[in-house]
Image (cartoon, rainbow, N blue to C red; front, side, top):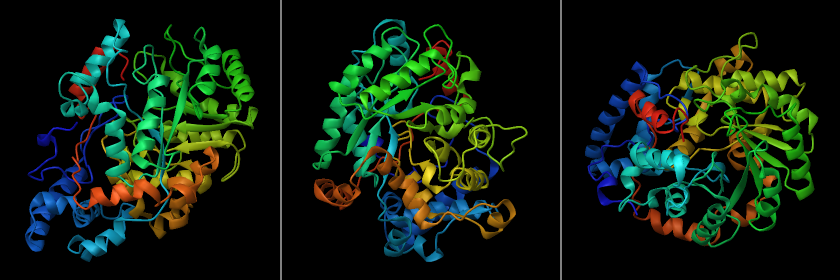
Length: 485
């Protein structure tokens, strides 16, 4: 359970985090001058807003006006960025208007969340010890754990952070990499039961079966993951291998065996970690260059490219096919394979990448603009990589209000980020792939009742989890012998 001193009683944490945190898989980048300015303006706005509304600073920041004022501060610090948050000035002082601005009725399906089996039974041997050190000594989330256990990474915490403190309707508990694994398939199945009990409606949580196709016994273990644990999709980390070598997904016999097994089991959605390299493993296998060819060669399999091929060290700009970096590498693979917007079986997923750029509007506008232009609004998936960052509500609020300027639409050929496009990205695309009954799960049932009850007196921590400095990131690398968690 969270400790009371983690709930920010003095109101020093902003509801929309403008910070440097990473998910532990890439080096945090220092705040740039505009981000530092946005933080300063947001804190000043919190002081002024609390005074104007007769609230404590904490109460103001918990309110919708608090989130609106933080996004407005980001706009003020980033004029002429090409993208901005649509926040009326009055919304920073009017909670009703603020809620109408940052709230929404979209169906939200988060296809990438994480939790950890809390007993620590996986913390055995060298790999288990590396995970234990990372989870207890590096991630900021550990400050919310008490008694030496991992409850702060549990499915119960995920349920609070993702379903009560955020507007998420359905989520996928995604598999992690490595052996032993802090999210073994049996705990993922248990997490599904815990989260579905929170919602009371069933089908609130789906799970991945993690597979390392080149490792002995992994292909054979897929049967149990479907038949016993009811895995809804597969999770691959092509850059991971016990011998330090990864595989390509378009020209490897192990990958082909995996595809055939997936087909035979009738589970043909595959989430693939691409971009964000895993340290001390061969960098090249983090490239998404194989994703276009793999998708074209396997048209009956849906490929969800997690992180969209991002590289934290490179800023996102306009698409450059001649020297592709970051997300451009995925777009080039998509284009070279002959895929077109809103067609085919290759999807770009936003986990960590949206969180990374949302306080950098000059990059966020190019990320969303070029994905809309080349992939299309029907081939982009909403994911947040939570619980590593805490609650994803600020990511949701930022995305709801973000717009691409008419100038950038004309200059770069970017489509508008319309309300309909946002609805598709937030959840309708994922619902189509996973066969989710949107009407049965959106804004109804026990989850809606519990969420309304909780939000009558909400108590979000606004804590950001994950390393925020070079020193913290390198501590992860050292704890894992160069391989982050």
